[in-house]
Image (cartoon, rainbow, N blue to C red; front, side, top):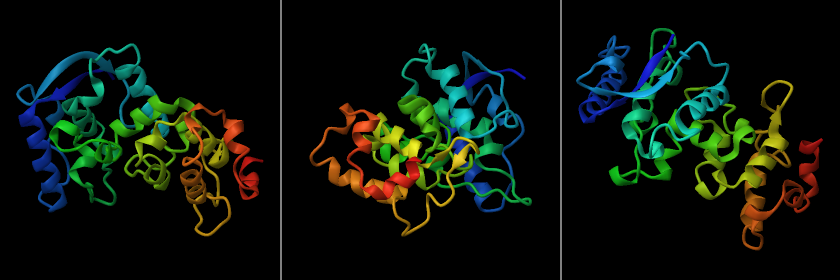
Length: 242
């Protein structure tokens, strides 16, 4: 399978909003057939993709692939502000980001599917919530270390993203994310370590975030190595580094 990536125009984005609302209200259960290929709603780009909804093992795999096709070597200028492209990708991979579960689809808020950027009332607080653009951007920030952030299902952000990607100063800090990944990502099972998100357990990811808030008052973590940051963490985190 190979398709040219397309970009929704204003009419395409408006149609997507309407369809999302109709799905929420039970009027329809899917996007119209060939919606993403309608010439009056989209513009074809020169970039192609050859992976469909069944070709990705996980969200990290998807982000890595789309980074290579859309971001690496700059094939699409100003890609991070291309509302029409990221929104089109959400419609193209709709079965990933809004799967049919027992005959029902449950779209989240529009900004999960239709990218909002600063000049249309969005910015990072909504960008990081987009289910396609955000994983690719997080991969671009931290590459392999983004695996912990991208360990949730395709159709949800998960608490690692909510805690560490909701603030761009965390999401874009490679040392913070690298240590996060080292502590809480299970390399053998390719998912978050068991118990990493358990409330009130010593050394969990939310506790790590609390410690970071204190450290950032006195240290420039962006310039530190992983080992330098780890040396500043309390003993309770040592278990997660074994």
